[in-house]
Amino acid sequence: MAGKQKSFAQQIYERIKNGEFVNGTYLPSERDLAREYHLARITVRQGLKLLLEKHLIESDSTRGYKVIRIPGMPDQGTLNIGGLWCSGQYSEHTYKLYHAASAEARKHGYTLFLHQAADNSADWAARLGELLEENIAGLLLIPTYSPQNGLMTLANHRMIAALRLSGIPIVMLDRDFPEKDIPCVVNDEYNGGRMVAEHFAFLGHKKVVLLAGDSNYYISARRFGGFLGRCDELQMEHLSIRIPSADFEKKLPDIRKEIRDFGASAVMINYPRFAEAFMRQLDSPDVDFLLYDTEVNDPVRGNVWCMERPIEAISEKGMQMLLDEIRRGARGLVSQIRLKPVMRKIPWIGSEKTKGHSL
Image (cartoon, rainbow, N blue to C red; front, side):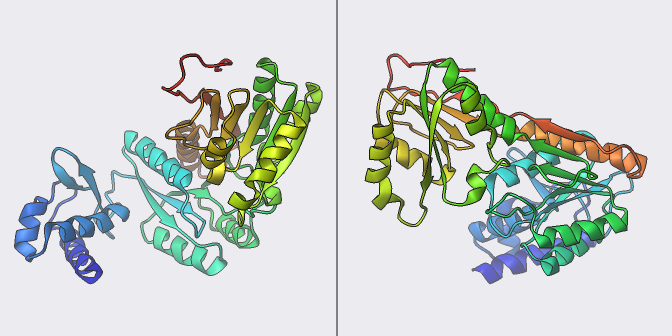
């Protein structure tokens, strides 16, 4: 099946490249393509998905699939911009960042091409080579970070050094990086942590718990490191508990007991992977929860807030900054923007009355 999908996608790719399907026009319907190529409709749809991922076409729910570029023949009226997502692992928030950045690029008549690279210099170079073949004028970049300290890995440093020498305008997105000579728009996690502490203080809490992942990154200054310091300033007692990823379920009784023995009335969960499961296990009407960057579909209690990355704002400002860099020829003043996370109350239908306040 996979072979049929790829073969079909390659044939449509060649027809687009040869100009049979012109940029800005719509492909035949899935039904017509399935009939023409003697394929099942699901096979056609999955083949078209491969072209969507290459940003050759876009999907319109009412009119079908529209050709948005011709491979190797960039539209002279369109500025092509590359996006390099430098992590070998799938990251939903990173995908959302580039999706929002792509939408912002299209507002200005530009096209953003996204490539994903693993965390090694060879794969970086290969993906960058693919982008350069697209005649990119600039590059949006989300480097890989070390889970131990939140700093960029060596492979990232090497490739960014090469990019500087190339003269390609670069803007980095999302995370706080030590490089101060590259334009960037970042999620200000440090001050986000301070916001959480202030929120707990506003609700009247005196004892709070930071429930974090088992790597040092989760309690570092680069990921809500301002939380514990602000708790001290506000004279709130705090306890940090590390969540072991390997035997989480087995450790749950001990974690629950530790929190109850401490007498905490508020818990900040800085480990999206187990947030919802933990809330269900600890379910208590007397404890307020605040989650970092976690989607919760059906919380079992009412007093839950979520601190989220301002994805739309990061993407829009990053794209605008990159366009400015391109116009100036990457010779302007380096600009760095830090955006605070957004806090929201997670609604819960099952509660007649919720405790606390939303910001």
